[in-house]
Structure formats: structure tokens, C-alpha cells
Image 1 (cartoon, helix red, strand yellow):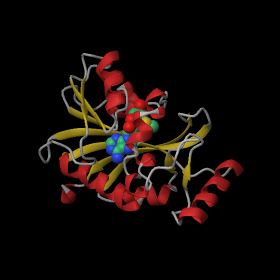
Image 2 (cartoon, rainbow, N blue to C red):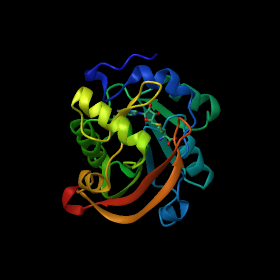
Image 3 (cartoon, rainbow, N blue to C red):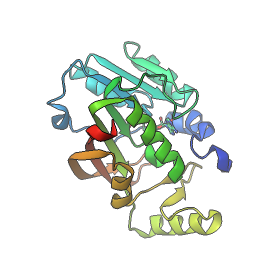
Image 4 (cartoon, rainbow, N blue to C red):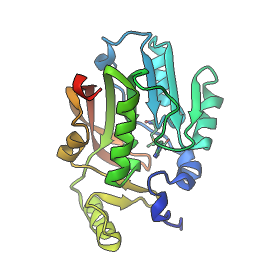
Length: 225
Ligand SMILES: C[S@@+](CC[C@H](N)C(=O)[O-])C[C@H]1O[C@@H](n2cnc3c(N)ncnc32)[C@H](O)[C@@H]1O
């Protein structure tokens, strides 16, 4: 059985993402119609890019300035092997980005907040994305939301009882500590952004379960830039 990560490591869980996590298939779909109005030379950053699945889709649709960062060297290596033409970098000290303020036009954040179970870690991540986004920049978030089936309810309750974590945090069968948000708290986390598009979808999780997810396209409010 995989050991639980130390509490201080919950914001990154590098051992998980560099181990079994690096063998997974990620599936959250991109709605390319949402990005139809974005210039093809927009500066695009995929935060928590994994092996570059989403970056590859954007490059294939004509985006010319796409780069991705991830805390896992193993996933970045996998991405570089499959798409040597794309620009990958390992995040040495997440969520800190080696980017100037206001230097990115579009950030993709696909199934990443779920890997950062605590409120402070999530707020720090969103604040860093806000720092690098240009005024009027877009953030496209895809996140699994809190599920109402028995398997999920019991693992949320078990984790909360054992570790005192917010309801919605749980341990996967293979040892990652993840979080499922309710939609209002996710919207609250993004309160410096104005909504552009939103949809609810069904996805297959990296462990093969069906789950409901939400996608939000939001724009940085001018006063928050
Ligand atoms: C479920 S995968 C999704 C990967 C990719 N976004 C996709 O949809 O194909 C989550 C990714 O987030 C990365 N990750 C987890 N916590 C992170 C953090 N604190 N900072 C940066 N990346 C993180 C993991 O290494 C993993 O690649």
C-alpha cells in the first residue's frame, strides 16, 4: 500500500506524481469553441500540464506560443519524449512561476486544483496565476466537483474524520490526496475573475471512475490586474 504523503507535502505530493501518477492517462476535454476568439499568437501557459496532452491539442489548432509547467520531472520527461517540439519546464518551487508579471494571455488549469487539497495552497496558486496574467487575460479551469455517490461520500467523511480536512478531501486508492470542490467555493476562489463561459461535463478520472466536472472560462477583472 502507498504511504500517505506527509501533511507538509500535500500541496505538491511529488512522490505520487513522479511515481504512479506519471503513468496515468488524463482526460478532461477542451472545448475549443471557447477559445475560437483567442489570437493564435496568444501567450499560453498550461499550469500542471502533465505530459502535455492539452498543449498538444492547442498546438494542433494553430496556437504558436504554448508552454507548460509541472512539478513532476517524470511527467515533464514523458511530455518531452512524446512532443519534443513543445516547450516544457519543471516547476522547482510550486506555485512560483519564472515569468514576469502580466506576461501570459491564457492559462489552462486542467485537473490541478484537485491535486492541491488545502485552501491556502489553492489561493496561493490562483494568486500566482493572477500575477502572470495580462490585464483581460483568460483562465480556463477544469475541475472535478463534489460527487454525491456512496463511494465518494464515504471517502470524504473518512478523510475529514481522520485528518480534520474540509469535506471533499479524500485519498485515492493509490495514495494521492485530492479534493472535490462544491461549485460555489470554486467560484469564490476565482472571485478576481469575471465569468465568460461555464459548463458541467462527465469525465473519466485518472483511475477510471466516472465523475462530474465543471469547466469555467474566466477573465481577469481589470481592477484585479
Ligand atoms: C490530473 S493531472 C492533469 C494533467 C494535465 N493538466 C491534463 O489535464 O492532461 C494533474 C497534474 O497536476 C500536476 N500537479 C499537481 N500538483 C501540482 C502543483 N502544486 N503545482 C503544479 N503542478 C501540480 C501533477 O503533476 C499532474 O501532472
